[in-house]
Image (tube, rainbow, N blue to C red; front, side, top):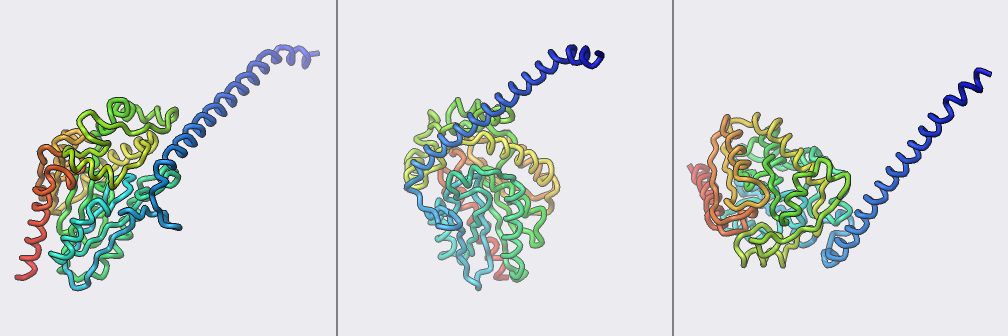
Length: 345
């Protein structure tokens, strides 16, 4: 009798509990369905746009400037080790003419590794990704390349945008320290991300929660640019938009993780770099990061290093391809010529 009474008392709570479980799993399933639907729709859209891209059959490197670049002459005694930014399709190709010029005219070895999710088709660049992967890859490539170099071989480690993360890790961990470190428009925690218009800018500030609801947005052209490329110079902007198209999607998840990477770098790497010669340059009209972010980057590294910096006027994020290109390249070349002069003594 007592068992029956107990069952009657628990009958209604049990029904409510079962009902709540059904509601929870229904909402969970519906949420997963919506995310899968978003992914499939964006994959179809991106794949149609990128159907013109050619990727290597196994490694899936973009053949249009997205393969690792090694311009090496054993007798050369200066190397430029260069790392481009996050998810870019053409890490070496955008700068190939400049790299060829340095290699052929000034006998500079050029190394441009492809790391992380760079130079990848849609499904590879939108996979599960952790920034620690990039650090593991780059430090191995750098150590392998520098292991048997003569002591007097000069190393310039340079990076664009997100490349600041692996660049800084080389500065911290590598056995052979760079003789010069160059950070161009470096990754930092003061992200603004105005390069794809006002809607994406607002969404970029909400990634901590938005990534669980909206997976992707489509890049939009900012009102003061000719394309989605953050290049102020109209002619150059259109040239690179035509010859080196960017990814057709922005990922809220990967945007969130890149922000986490910036915070990690500023807390766990930059403050511990010391006794290096560092040059930092950025554009005064950068749409990805605030001016305060670049100034803070300089401030952190200036505590224990010899730091020089240059703010390029009338230039956006892609400083090597914009109005300040000539000034910037001449500045970098001046360091190279200084090294050559020292080696002759």
